[in-house]
Image (cartoon, rainbow over all chains, first blue to last red; front, top):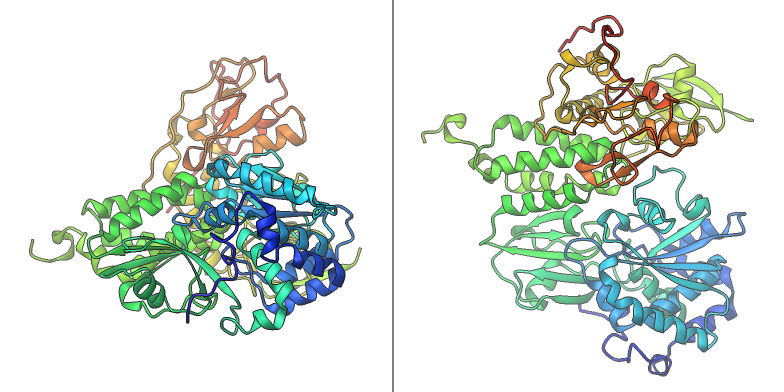
Length: 404
Length: 225
């Protein structure tokens, strides 16, 4: 399936500092249409379009909006999650840099549909350079009377990976230490300051204006049965043409990596960053959709020259560093896993260690508090599934009963 | 309030709407081990020891913070749950620089009791040990953070009951630590003699300043497993 630009349609075409260049390409027409059809109709359109959250979990966007709209609370909040912390993702940076207006329009429509008076954009701390451009876009939209119904505020993070997790993100906006909260209650029920809150990824909100303009039926025909629309991928690693590409959901990994970004000798592909899945080079026909693997759209390619244990070790090192430290399995487990993998990396593994890794992985994914801890063992379980021979070769020969 | 009927370990049990799985289990004398849970205070869900299996949920759920809902089917002691709890205790023991023989609270230590209940002798995991200097400049409280299991009960008690907000959490991941001010040793200026946190501490991390001739509390625990 080919590339198709829905989210990236304005990137590189408009002047991101100037609102008139955006309105010349049909900007804020969707907001006008949305204001005329009313909130119920907007939510109906979004629900029918089958748009799912682009942050990785893939929760139906329309449902989330409906839950929050139907609560009796007067004050509600909308948060745009621009804390793009996942390893190897840079799509939101590209979007915010080139087309901040579509995001503002998406937030304006979403706020109107849900009945929100105050919205936040939670910008990653490292993206401080974008906050001026984003603020400029908000100011210009305000001057042109597009934001009369909602107040948009930019909040910058302080560089914590876990603050991309929605509950830690809310703690961070509240001014607390960014730590995951337990669920239930879900954010749509008790979120920011214990009020109903919708949290949407940048890319999700970028889709909204186009769905409103072109209708649910148009969006619904793109993609596979349960994954509608397109997805923006950040491709990096051992590829000839790294970059941001937008593909129709359901396209194969092969198309993206071989045809578009021209890589060869692929050993393993990490999809979805540090907490994502590993796909070996032999399974390159895997479709990219919510049904198989997707994550937040980060694709890191490793070729035959890379050592699999180094990949696993550095991923675990990152997760151990970025664990918030609240729940036991994640705080202690990531550290233990890092040490065990280091043993294998130095060629000192044992069969017993492999057994421990398996048990620990299952306990962590079952008992951890938030998505970070639950997904942290993914890289271990996947690498043990596809590269078991590598692990076994790193057990000293005398412990395997093989002649040294 | 309406009553809700759930199934725990195959038995139909009725409880008030709004109570958590853990509270219902306690009312019906089902013992779910906990570490971070303080009765009557808001739950934290930090230690994850109280996890139970709920039919229809992919991961295990923390019973201390999950309210019961109609028709829930709960397993509190299934093999999956027990294996997970055992690993959590083993993880805590792996980084606990516990010299139980010389610890004043070793006979009343909740971590050791939990390990004993689950037949855990030595942890199978190897991890870094937490070592911190003992803070004993305050006349009211001695802190030995090497023994801390980060259950955060001291924080909860200090914030919610004593309303002093003395403690906070500093650093991240494995290095996170219960700190006072900007990681200063606790002294008599920030904390007076209420001692609530000392009674709430499950291990020997917080204790009354040692007195000469004091004997170990509790009857000696037997280590099994």
